[in-house]
Image (spheres, rainbow, N blue to C red):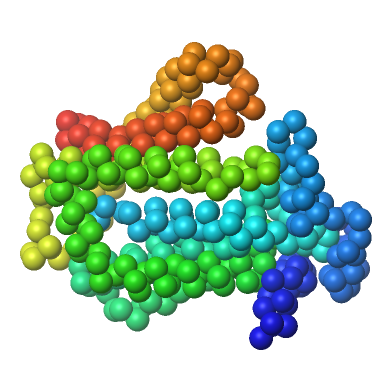
Length: 344
């Protein structure tokens, strides 16, 4: 078992998968796909354990190096924190070809892409089985194929080992099994409890401010804050809609089918989409400027100072306030504008 786990955690299976897909390092094209294990221990390794241990220059990470929706938010937080606790390096390059660079400063285990794909696809399947008229087997196959393709994409891009994606998928599966019996109860509390807005803001903020500390800067804390902020804003928006908006349906009589698509319906759908995107992007742009300006004034740093924006006291409130506003805008302002424009 230990040998199997060691093999799944190594870079060679990832490199072999890339070669099988036709992806070779520069200069190896047409070489017959030699053993990708060759060169794995050369001094040219630009990431993996060596990169994670290299001191970051100038504060930078190593180079190359209607449900409330709380499920994916919980999954992503657990995944991001697990990375910085376990501190397992990403695959070595060489032999692996890295197609992404931004997240290479992060650790690898578990794959949050695999976690999110598994959680979203199977949550969607479970939540819609009794509301849409489609064969359960078809939905199960679709969820499995979608999550599998996302997992394979992380191997193809060279960002995760096989064990990373398997671990991510298994963690989401366990969380789904544990949380599924409490879905309705959690949803009811989030939509009706008078304490929901307060808890939806305070709890994620506490988690973000107590995120595990690293020896160098990594985008994981910022990404986690973005996810929790957006989820917090959306949750408050759902709660507000439930309190003051008339429900369009009840779970007892709601049964969706697939209506015939007409030209008028297509126009309305496209209009709703572009109006929603415009409002969300406008909210994001305005809040980024306002919040960053206020923080710059408070902590005495120019807006363009990237190092200052990476500090805990700046990064967390900046990203949390910005993206909680985006989540709130998407769940409250966008539907409100749709109604005013007659696009409901």
